[in-house]
Amino acid sequence: MAIQFDETNLSASMVGTEHGLTKQEVAAARTLALSALASFQKASEEKVYGFPDLPLERDIVKEILTYTANVRGSYDTVCVVGIGGSALGAWALDCGLRGPHPVQAPFSLKNPRLVILDNVDPVFIASAIQSMNPKKTLVVVIAKSGATAETCSTFLIVSNWLYSRIGKTAARRIAVVTSEGRGDLKTLAVREGYATFHLPENVGGRFSVLSAVGLLPAALVGFDIDALLKGAAQMNLLCWSNDLTKNIALRAALSHYLLLSKHNKPIQVAFPYSNQLWGMAFWFRQLWAESLGKAKTRAGEVVHVGQTPIAALGATDQHSQVQLYMEGPNDKVFSFWAVKKLSDTGEIPEKKLGLEGFDYLAGQNLAKLLDCERRATEAALTENSRPNCTYTLDRVDVLHIGMFFQLMEFQTAFLGEMLNINAFDQEGVELGKKFTFGLMGRKGFKDYKTRFAAYEAKRK
Image 1: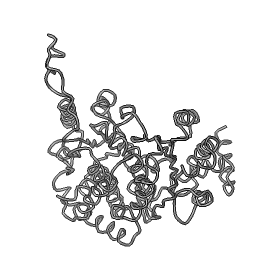
Image 2: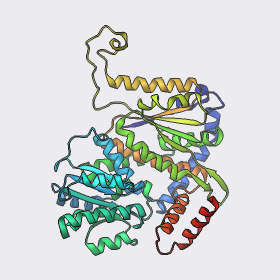
Image 3: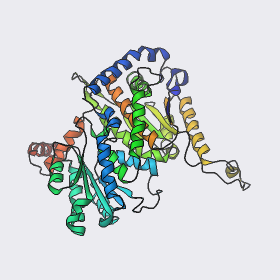
């Protein structure tokens, strides 16, 4: 079980000094990297930030496994109601361990499916509800604040659907994940008697996949959450090391810091060459964007810093995005996500058709073709002076996914320290939420409705 990070194609010797990193540049920044490690470790030990502790939290695992054992066999659908960090982790896990829809095996009481309601598009919500049987659906509503507008509104619709179809027993088919000591969702859960699971206050939504936010849906659809946390715990050991040859999260963060700050690479393309990792690319997109896109440093200096994440799927997006990447602005760094051993090789029949476009492929396999596609794209980008690196998972299984989640979260935290920003707040998101509350008439947000009216008047 292992994950490797290969930064060879980020070097100046491969892509030139304008776009790549010199050995002297990396060596000079080593002190910065170790300082970032030390400062984040201190904050973690002081419990300011809690995600590093999640793989070691056994009480919540016991609660989840006990609940899962009690309800198993009573549902064929787990309906997650959440948005952002309350939904993307569960989706990433589902794609990683069972593959993306529609290629998953038929759902049943023994193999429940995961339906994630992460948007308030009314057609989407109505279609999802029509696809579910209320007598065989278990609803998991997730909101740390307990007042997320999208989650609360969708839950009102879904819970009304459940109660109207099966009566008061609907309460036994609803579980809640929220903060322990605050929020209207917590109040409602207590009032209605919903099974309730809590997440630590020092764990933000985008860092919460290894809390009850991700573990409860994962356990309910049958994933081994003990193995998931075991993989994450093993990555923890590497991420606390001050040896950069072992600490790939710190090494990768340093590379991205230098490319962003010294070589004008404000965009990162996460490029998984595995459909199983496609959901994780969207999870990563939120993690990277919300954590690192900040207006000010911790000292209040205006910087407007950040690296824009883009998700691309190999080999699919070689045919939709790579033209831009090869010949467009050289403002990107590419992070390939590779898998050393796929669970199926996709053998191509040996029969030849007498047609060159087909016959050279005969007797080979899709795993080799996918790997060649990735390596060819790496080579082509490098030849065009486009810096790129590769993360390689030995395989895609629950252990490696746990490792990869934790690797990416540590990498993000380390880069935040190097940039001297708070990677754990999200003020830019909050303003839009407050405008929404004002427009929807929530008490206490009248000023934001007034501000929005001024905006509308200015537009006219």
